[in-house]
Length: 274
Picture 1 (cartoon, rainbow, N blue to C red):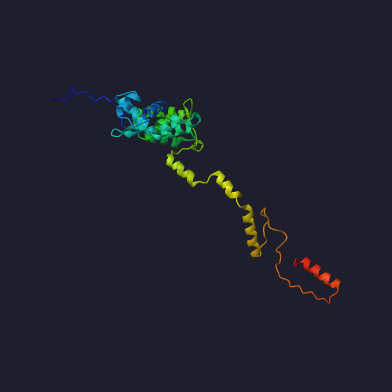
Picture 2: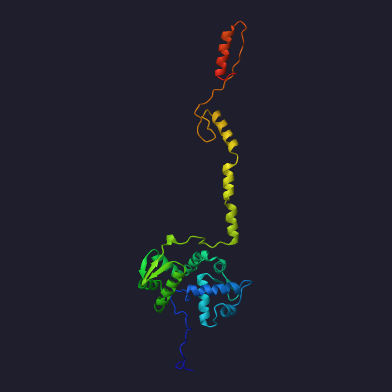
């Protein structure tokens, strides 16, 4: 049998041509697949054919391309042996209110390596589309795919609120301006651990106000014992100075006249001896 009559193998539409991997599905489309995925795998992981037919809507190579994109965005987990299910990020997007979606979209868009490196290169800058294509080529994206890669990058970044398009110019948001709300995914167990290790605001208030009088009293006693100026309840040093502590033995002499005795008693009262 000769090979002359063999036809070259045809890659399915949307299939890989080599080079650096990137999601070949727009983020907006992947988000729709992610919602279906959460619903289909709510109770348990599902086999590949269920994901292809019921989630991404294609059984051919296009379906596998879509599944690959969902994995790269962080929406899909699993394998052929164990089945496929929604990853944590997809679940959070499906249940989050509208005002909390943007930071989650940003997480998804910065998961693929090529997209993140493009953003890291140009965040805070305004660049031409041609510059993005040049950078994609530097990142080893296949020459025939740089246009597609940049188009998907731009559309996804707009969806995530990371860039705006002004004609042929792409205006990138500065990384310091990104929404820092919960940028790291935490498992429920880790969240509970964080809460238990951090005192609440109510605990902090209680620690500040509990036992004020007793603490102030013991501190003043210690200051007097050391000969220092005691502090008043407001924390200011006592301006009257330390009081001398001494013992006085008084012996009354019946031979003294009343006037002298009265002067001695007044003197003792002045110094607090009696």
